[in-house]
Length: 183
Image 1 (cartoon, rainbow, N blue to C red):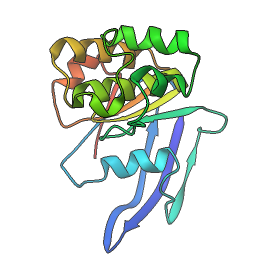
Image 2: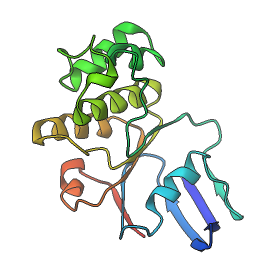
Image 3: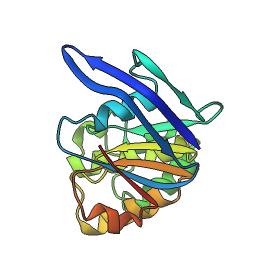
């Protein structure tokens, strides 16, 4: 169990969380939903250590390998799709995971020349090549057509624990979620 207790976070002059507590399971797919600006991305950034809360504790992340898919792809544009994923794994594994996401024809194309949906799939591939222990995903289906969403959902379900932020209510069915958190 990942326990978030009495979390308080202020960004600028906005209080995002005040004495917020929630438990996340050790395994499965957790969908985090809520209005824009409510704190979904902030929660993800706290879980991966990019934002330090003013108060509160998070337990259950020790010795767990975390990977992240941000809203916008964070690729090295001068590297190919394959090279971006191979930064965190061997080339054979990188190629395998990219092919599972329908990227076999784009393996050797520089990330800067890929479409938005292709960049998103490379970001997904790199995150899952790095770790399937805990994967934090912020709007992971952005720019993906239905078939590519299904392929991505299958990959997401392969994580030990996937925490998915989404505005789309259909993502719950697509991901076969185990738990839903509405902020």
